[in-house]
Length: 145
Image 1: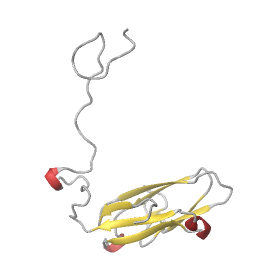
Image 2: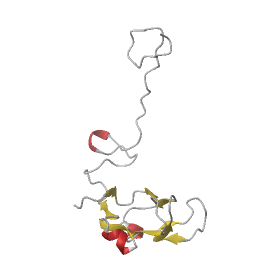
Image 3: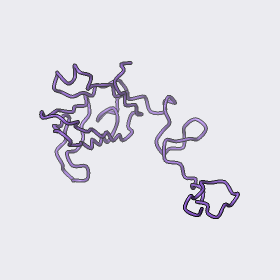
């Protein structure tokens, strides 16, 4: 694998990619081989993009509805800044789409992963903030000193 960032997902999983344009006076082009995303995420009938322009200090919120494209095909896809000098400078990487059910990464919200674990956020509660020097576990408040 290259030393550039690699995105990994199961075939058919929804994927959200955040792209940020570092300070530069030239516009850049983000592209993802074999995939499309809506120009506006929640707009019915929005144009589908496979390359999107962004400028200095702009961000893109790329929401791919299914990893592996319309056919949900496992494989290695290329993401890149489609302006070749930027690609040559290292603004590219792989989007690895694993077969559905692969145990290389945790599944999304299905509960069917190894040991029943999933990649969703944990549901346990954080410990209560303590005050007054209680001996129960948890963070201590420095405001009550």
